[in-house]
Image 1 (cartoon, one colour):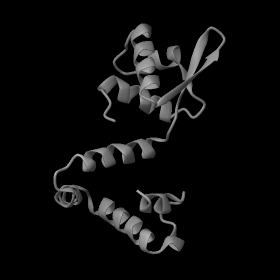
Image 2 (image 1 turned 180 degrees about the vertical axis):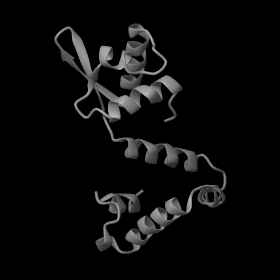
Image 3 (image 1 turned 60 degrees about the vertical axis):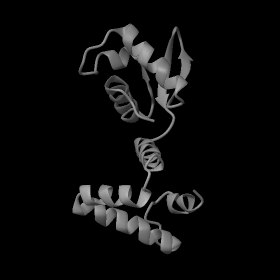
Amino acid sequence: MRLGELERAVMNELWARPEGALASDLVSVLPSGPAHTTVLTILDRLVRKGLVTRVKEGRAHRYSALQTKDVHVAEVMHEAFAGARDRESALSHFVDSVSADDVAALRRVLNALDDPGAGAGGDGAAGERRSK
């Protein structure tokens, strides 16, 4: 799921705050200096998209990301590849566009798929990827 610029800025703040944040906390740190009502609108949109949860805290709500940034990035990449006419070509172009360090990391993850005991993902992600 692609995010707009302000949605991305809000999510980056929430990912950096595992304890979550109030809208007023976010207003003061967002670089564009949006109005409080604008931040509330963005947070409501993120809740409806299933990216954020809100819990009542006094008269306000505390907002938290429902998934890590890494999981979100993986989902965006999956959606992008799923939309390609030629997935192999898209993957080839992607690999050609990333750094040597990223290629090495990708190679480690792929090797872990062949050797589940290697555990390159660190969180059991390699096994989950096989079933998709």
